[in-house]
Image (cartoon, rainbow, N blue to C red; front, side, top):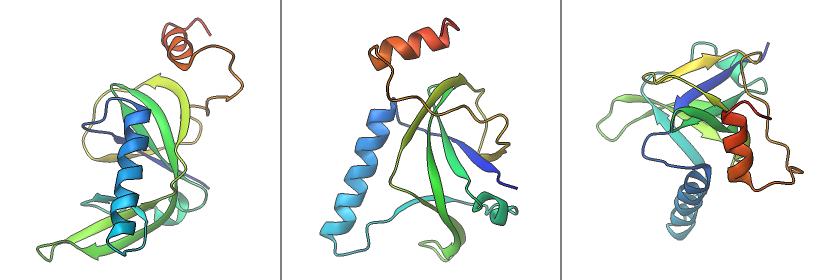
Length: 141
């Protein structure tokens, strides 16, 4: 059974800013001659990695609301700069906006049941994204 991860996106104010920051990271890796792979580092590896990698995504909480997700491509244990063990969450470069859903702050990452995961935003919405987001947050659409 698929399970997702959810994480606060600290220091990021919008999905566009997250998209730009990740593009900068990929460009920097290319310039260094390294493989352009998006990695999010965590201290602890998910015990349910097999379920997470069975179609799971990392859902990003931005300013108190789940706002986007990225499919998870891999989970690897690696050594950090000082030899400590770290977990590399390998992310798809595809950043998919979701219907904004309020989420209380928490530390680290958490498992997210697919039933609780917000749906993806439909790209055929006729109104400006900011207006649609505000109306969704108000529960009007």
